[in-house]
Image (tube, rainbow, N blue to C red; front, side):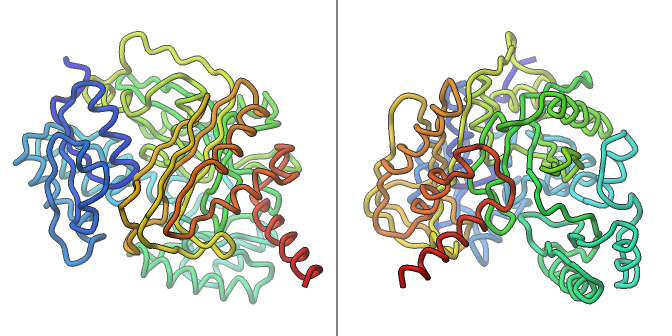
Length: 458
């Protein structure tokens, strides 16, 4: 069987669409791009072999119209569909529709997406495979009384989460019964509005936590390939800002246990294609629990590519088409890589700040890679996520990668709109990040220090 599809439709936009098209072009795979008219000037459209405009009441609805996208794929002669991340990437109905339409789905099966997309069900499945979880394996909590009973078993503080949630939406910490009852109702309501499901669960809250994930590739023969870990603890509002690989100061024995748990979780559902198993590590005790599994390629995949010398999109296409990796695939871990998410947002409050881009000058130099969705003359609209580009720095050591990342962030010139570059520079220059001994509270600590300095100077 041919290792790659003949023609690939990319069911996404911006940076990740451009990234997928780049690999497809390198492999000689014909590409079809889809776009809403507000994205008509973005670079990825011109880099595809063919582009088709989507129709929809809103730009977001257009990219979520799976039936329209499949029709376009069939009419354009595509043989496979790559969903990227976001939009329909973890939509089981879309994955099922693609397969039923005779197209190759670049990702795990619809059944796996359904199981892992439900945090209550995914916790039950991985726990049965021996993977540590926080809280009960039981069903979603229906009432505030049930939530209080569960918190009594776990001990406060606790975290309330939406079973179908993502991106930190609806997550809330409760320190006592009154706070838990309020958080439970708020999360339940927000989950229903945001995800169409009000299923909620409670788990123990770890105040000093590290967010570490393992990159996997599941093959048709059932084997699971792991490609190291990424530390994603630098977050604002539970959304990642900076990632690095390998995770600094991670005990080798703990790393091995994380890898073993990732393999067990993937095998429990018969995982195929690229995915990521995420964990929370108690920075004090070293204990860890399963957080979730992302059934798609991750935003931060470039740092794994840099530290392992692989092209994950190429491997995704190969696995989807032939069931296995490309001939000679033999990744070797080396060096260190850091990724910065450059976003069109207020660097203090992190509110989106869309607008036109007048000047766009990307950093260059040894070890520097930029995956961008925009360029000079394009416009960031308010319809989508604020991500502009990912600046990645690779070095033989963490110190070298860190220095290159900071220099690249300063060198990146974007004019015409506000970005979070100044805050990323503050984080990279902080004692916490430089030491590598930080947790998910690092952004709040830096912000509080900045506020204290501002008060003293006022």
